[in-house]
Image 1 (cartoon, helix red, strand yellow):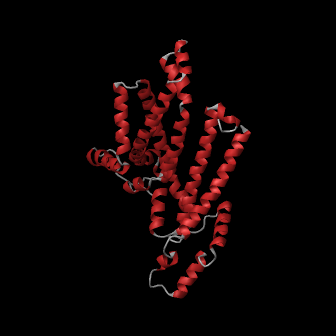
Image 2: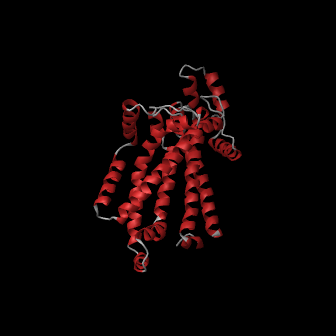
Image 3: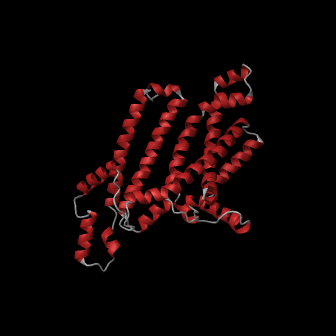
Length: 317
């Protein structure tokens, strides 16, 4: 188990380092001068040169990379060119909305998808399986922003029971804040639930064909005990993979939903930073989101070893 964790930890560190190189190189080759964008086309050459020096754009690329990497290790994310506040402060303000939204969407997605996948697999080729597959096909096909607009029309415009957008803030109280996030959570969760339900169903169908499942049934194990006690645990590895990927997507890929519901989260911040060419915000946000994906994958790998003891020997089973 220790060797398994050591290998995964080394892989995570190397991947993080590679991610910093890719992010830096990609942003360095983008066309346009951030200083010119900030000051405008009529800026004086002296003013432009002073801002470029302040932003460190006059230094060689390799020195800028090492400086940025050192700042990342020390937790110094710099000052936003647009907002003139520390980037870490901006991220903390926005993550207090995006992180709970992603957690709520993932929980709702899991609570819907896993039971549906189990029910569909246990009723393979029956009407209930057909109904679940129709739902999952619709969930995969319908864009989440269009589904979000339907939710707004139904619950905000027609029924008038939920707000159409905006965030009340955690200072307004738990209930008003959760009410503000309810429609965005549903809009994010249901399409993801459709994907997760299909993966759960497929994984369960593979496991239910195994000999040990037939042996358990032959020994008198009940249907649901066999499904939950024997089949589900062995079907969890693909499900855990999708859960890890989905949480990363929900945390980083909420740009459209946050704009539909006018939520000031991480997704909207990175969209605004790209539009304003605020490279220090874009660079640090992208690498933090990439780091979140890499760390989540590391956690999923550890969960693999917990679920399947065969992987603890070296991770190559």
